[in-house]
Length: 262
Image (cartoon, rainbow, N blue to C red; front, top):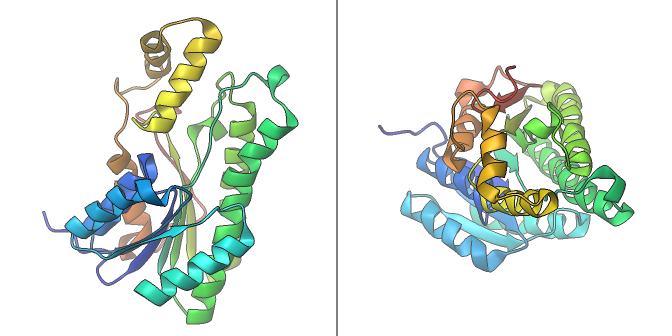
């Protein structure tokens, strides 16, 4: 079925070299969008860019560390110069380490906060300012996590950073509403990505168990007994970025196979 809900739009996706970000980039391209990618792995992002182009969209890659305001400003200038004004933003760039709280260092804490929370703030501020200046009725989608809603051991710093993203999104929606800009968060459950694979390896090593056993435990709390696919997060992102989602704002939507429904 043809999907043109984002036709003639320019969507910026951070962390789109792989995983959920790549899935979202592919999905918004299938809905007609051109895509700018901010990622610290521009070489890896070439595959995502090729998939965007195969879907009929234009793609541009920028080597941007989302914890650096100067790098974001440079990337934003480049994105607008190459693909025009930005109408949609997906803050997906994120990091995750499985570390018990009593073993979490200050560096571990800052590592999560700088990318997940600060990065979301800095990119949102820059792109929202651009949208206001352009008079764009845009949309911002922040990828948070079910870790912000339901506790899982070893996720203290990660969960705190993602809970901050959810709270920040709600305030962002309040402040940008008068400018015709929506802001929402998506809380993915267990999605089949390299980050989740790394998480499984860390938890398996920490608990001296097999990775398959750790995954079975994680999926036991999901109503649907499988991992999600990156594009399934992209389906919701397309809704929120499109005209169909223009009356949805300030929400944190769980896309998690029922993980948070208990």
